[in-house]
Every structure is written in C-alpha cells, then in structure tokens.
Length: 144
Image (cartoon, rainbow, N blue to C red; front, side):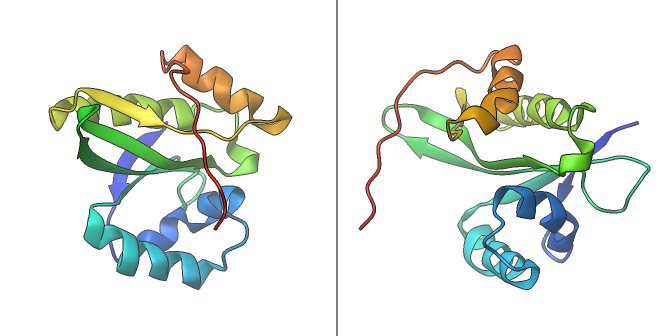
C-alpha cells in the first residue's frame, strides 16, 4: 500500500534517495541543506510516496504555491522523482493525485510542472498526460 505524506523540515533526508535519482550532482547533506535552508523559507514543500518496503520515500515531489499575473494562484512542481527500483509501481501517480488535491485545498486555479525532454523522459511524460497535464508552453532559458 502506498502512503502519500508531506515530508517536513527535520525529515528531509527521507527524500534524498529519490531526489538523487533526478539531481545526481548533489551530495546528500548538501541536498538537505539547500532544501531546508534556502528553499523551505520561500515556501518550498516536499511530499513523498512511501510503501512498506522502506523508510525512505520511493518517490517525491518538491513544489510551491505561488501567484503570477498570467496564472493567478497556482501550484508549481519543481521536482518529481522516483527511485529507479520503485518505478512503475504507482508511486508517482499517487503523488500527482495528491498534488492536484493539494492545489484544490489551497484554492489554486492551476497546477504546473516542467519536465525535461529526451528519450529517458518518455515514461514520465506518459504519466503526466495520463493525469491530464497538457503540454501548454515551451520553456526557454539561457545559461549566464
């Protein structure tokens, strides 16, 4: 059985294995510090999907609720990742359902999620499309 619950400050290490699957350039202690010291004060939150097999979150989502002129109040998913050995077992799907429910609880008009492109992202994109998240924009950036 999958349990979805928020991962609060002081327990951020429960998200580290899944986060490292998406952000491998970090070391665990650095991830915890960046999240708890830099991101959480600005409204960043973590939610995890847990099962009976481990104390660690099998999948995580990092998100924030923000306001923009173009969207109004909305929930933005910054990270969504699943430990490779747990993929395909429903953890990410449970997270998407929880995030949509949280957006409604917080009176958000929309949920937004950016996802990188490439052949290694196709399974994630299928998941998002199954949950009625549509490709609605191009995301542009440049390195400075």
